[in-house]
Amino acid sequence: MRKRLGRGGERAARGAAPAGRSTGGPAATAGGGPHSQGNAAVATTRDGRKLFHMRRAGPDSAATAPTVVFEGGLAASRSYWALVQSAVAARATTVVYDRSGLGRSPRDPGARTLGRMAGDLADLLGHLGPGPFLLVGHSWGGPLVRLTAAAAPERIAGVVLADPTDESCDLLLEPSMRRQERIGQLVSSGLAHVGLLAHAYREVLAALPSDAAADMREEGFTVRAMRTRAAELVSVVADLTALRESPPHLADVPVTVISAGRTSVGMNARVRELATASHAHRAARYPRGRHVIGPQADHMMPVTGPDVIAAEILRLIDGAAGAEESG
Image (cartoon, rainbow, N blue to C red; front, side, top):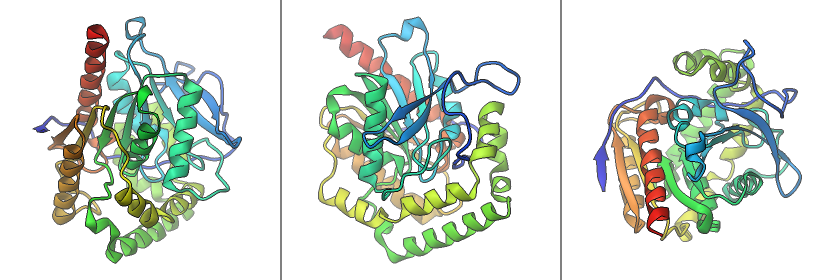
């Protein structure tokens, strides 16, 4: 099913942080008030690594709603989810986190394969409780949440994939994509080294709440972040190939795949068309799949189309509530 929805804010960004920041306790803004993304905490992975996350509790009326957990794209920290998180906070508890080597989470000495990152997300869910959870993944976070959901579908109330990377898109396996990735890595690393990477995302920073923008400005454009970006890129071809050979099975889980409607840097009209076709293909593969297009959003949808993502999250929350009542 395909539907066109409305528009959101500006553009979006990626993030990572210095190692010395506080990783626990109540979060606060510079002015001393509560942080828009919630309270800070740390989860421990099965091999002892720490994952920084922020939990924004929903109202008492949302006590039975699934907890919404957000997963970012390539090298993306928690901060760029702030607009979507705020849009659904009145209906559910929300959690954002930093993958290893990003934001306030220490680096991972191991390979940053898709499977390892999906395992880390599963460890975070285990720390948060039994569920149910509603997983939201953007870009490279899309296949990541699919893997995590398929490993324990009984605790997943729904999945929202925001302009996700999808293995059915042949373009992603072409040599031209590897060249584009290398160029992007060199440019981003170079700008980070001279302290200019944040300038490229000034519209993103302007669109975010001030506290999330301050976090992203400090944490999101560092050399450390770009090293993590490079580590996450290493196994992309192998991970996409593995997904083609064994796609995650989500037969009983409602899945919404959202495509951006606008082109953007790195996604010209041809790439945009192929990506959208891959999203329609993925939604059609799921018995409870749905394909939505956000006409005013570009690939950085958490900032350019937060309302589109939020609408689909709320629709799945309503569906979960209806299923509970009928059950």
